[in-house]
Image (cartoon, rainbow over all chains, first blue to last red; front, side):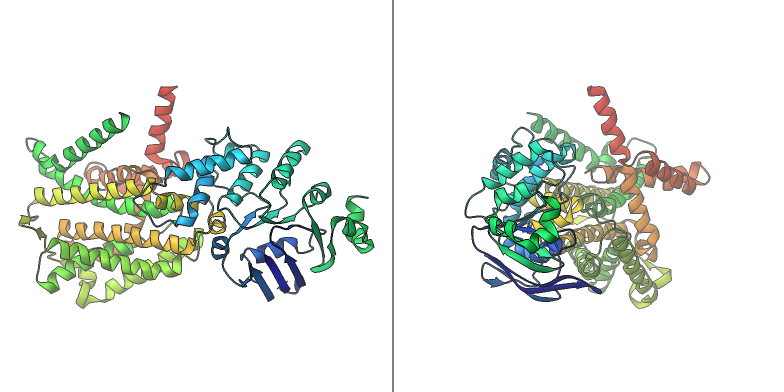
Length: 243
Length: 318
């Protein structure tokens, strides 16, 4: 569904990605883990088109989309939940999501109001992520956990085929983490999900396969159990976290 | 019910505005007041068009006079060259030239944002200013373009001061209605999304570069409309109309009145013009007064007059 072939990205002399090949099948739940600076966020930025690779290819649903801009990829069914929320702060939660729901129709309708169906769809989505009673609250007045839920709703607003989750539980309390993890686990099975996460409980709960990045290279790729047993992974990463 | 009442109020206010020369005819200063109000409305159209960028889409342009001036020159020159005083010819030329210029300048400017956008629009406007200054055959250069015709349309003659005022007031109301419809439309909401979070807009599938360019062209076209009216009103177009001073005048009107609101820029334009034209004959240093008013608003009332009004209304309701 989404794959990279020998992806490289250098920032000046610093090589952030050094030949990364990852292939995620349709409907798969994939986690990408690795220590800070391993290249996870760079990989996501290339997948969403916000960054161009120095070399290598990106394919989405079989189509070569290398170098495509973010909005073109969004229109092809790619969505991202950012690590640091990207919301429309002064707007009510409902209007935040409605902007995403209506995006497919395009903005060039200067004299027609957005249809009521957009608002209904936005409300349904907010209900799904557990913000059903907060639809009128401006995004900036929501708690951190609620803002993460809204961020997820925004990522889902265009009914994507591939969802990239960049540390979905970052900064959350254990209760909030549990809630958003089961929320993500309950999403449609046809949705392809790639998740970057530091919380190993979350990773092992969500992912069917785990890819381990270290210094811009894939050092392991397999089932959660296999990766957990991998000695090299334990040495560079897991050992320090799980211990 | 509330909607009907609001519509009735808006209709009544519009009628009162357009018929001002009629019902004020008994006043001693009716003619003077009509002239002042006319120029307030022209500046208001300019400020409203600028606020579509500054307040709605979050694009702080400091070169908006380029489009105002382009519209003013285009209308005046088109009428002179065609030997016609047709209103549609003049306005059509103004809007077309201003929009085209905005398309060119916008294509470069909208790739940036914030302070870089501000500097780039300023730089382009200075180029337009220099061109207007040097193209003496076309624009009259530093002497200006004198003897601009006043238009006619379907047997209506806008040569008299009352008729011209009514033309200006009608177009002002038209601009307000257009902007009001845009605000509640899918397009207007997308512009607000652009202002609040461009990255998220891109991630949602909006082509933000194109969206910004469309707003830039629309705002430029409306500013050109205001410029054409200014030429009719003063029978004169000069490099002042494409100057940085004019751009700043619009910016001050937007900020004093309240950016991002429908009527704020119009109120701000009225205040700015009142200080420049009415107060200046009564108080020395009126330009200084305008500067002080601006500073006070920037420091103490960022939401402008509309913001102060909203806060007061909120307190009364509570």
